[in-house]
Length: 179
Length: 139
Image 1 (spheres, chains in turn purple, orange):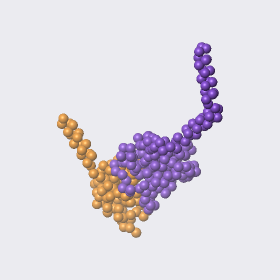
Image 2 (cartoon, rainbow over the protein chains, first blue to last red):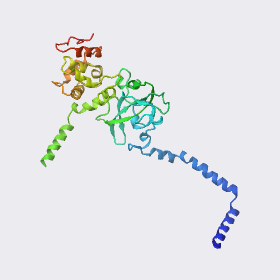
Image 3 (cartoon, rainbow over the protein chains, first blue to last red):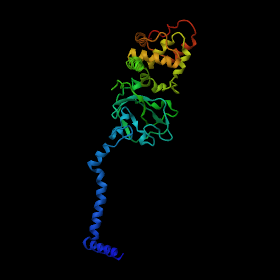
Image 4 (cartoon, one colour):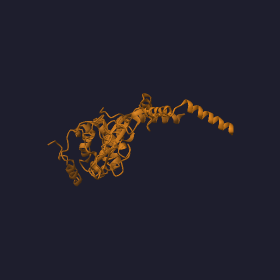
């Protein structure tokens, strides 16, 4: 026991002789600041691009909270996944409109096209977060069935638009011709 | 060995079917957004199940193609004919006889309905006789 005590005593005295408290503080501060700046390095950003989404798609195209998510190809509105809901469910207190805009999107994960239903969530004032306006395959108002500037809350009991979902209906036999 | 060949033949035949195989796809993409997947419609969109009320009435066959949603759908005459044959069978329980042809669809699409709901009321009140003269030409 006394041998262990002596060893620790020696170690402590030695480090007290060699290291000042300021020296330790400066090293410790360096580690703190350096650790905080790690995510800013290109390495961390590259890692984010390799993150795998639920559909097996890598990077931003696989993240339902990003506008770049593959299912959002024809969306025009606020993403429900940023508004308290998800990309398939409405936020609490809102109602999913039965009347909806429907189109197809290409899934880069498996190379197939899918029919996507952009059901709007209605009944609360507009969400205001994660505005996404990609409109691929959208057509002017005279093609009303391919226009998403209409208020698709028309079929719900309250017509106030809150946010939009992107629900997969099934695989498409072909991509929609409006591209 | 032989049953396998027969099954393979059936699968091949079904996979090479032309416009007919797109009927459900075209329904989902062009109709279901408003009429919904099950055709039940909503507060502001008519239910497709109400098509059954017009079965057998003169002018119903033509009316179903001339409604704006069908006549203006961004589909070729052949694809719309296949879609209408599928749709009428699904929502009335019996296939249109004779089946719609692309030629018939092309002719019907040329005469738009100015007031579809009023035209439907006239059709449903009609029991016999030919009412083709109603709205048969664009005003």
